[in-house]
Length: 215
Image 1 (tube, rainbow, N blue to C red):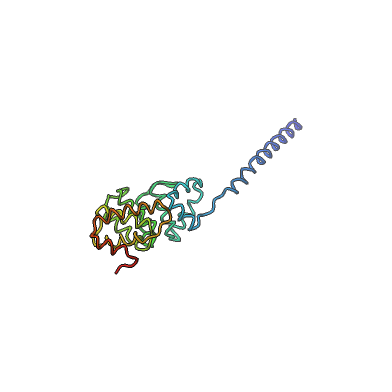
Image 2: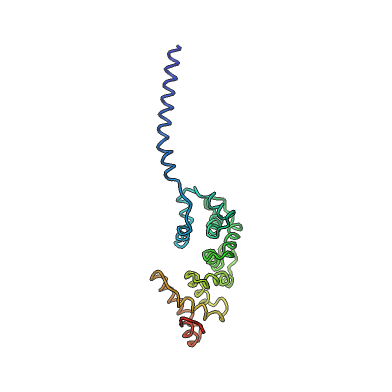
């Protein structure tokens, strides 16, 4: 009987060892596939390509605590943008749109062009907020003034649709007309929007707005 017990114990130990050995490759793989926090350059690219939330999901939500810390504690605008959007849509966290929008506003106040543009888009479409396209102008204009091309495209679109002050049409036209575009699609879109806005302006003002410098 005692011998049988020893044999049974040995079998149990062998099975346990085999189980641990089977786990080791998985543990090693898990360590190898751990995700590093995004650099500012990486995050900007993700935001510009509108795949930032998709990437957080693809990373199996491993970076939630790091993203939250950089947004809430370090107050980094780009991470405030990302964390705010995660809260807006409930990505890897419970949905909390009012908190998410507040983070976007904080990022915008710190000069984040991405946050300014996103807030303008929300007010343009009336998503999560009451539709107010004149407020969209207010949000996007500082980013446009600082040279952000997507913001300039949106500003001229808003002006062309009759929102904002006609006094500012010349400046919006000037900014976009003298922008440099990274791709043909943006250039084509700019040309179309400029034509739409030009129809609301006297020819002499359009000609002046096309100059490299406004006088």
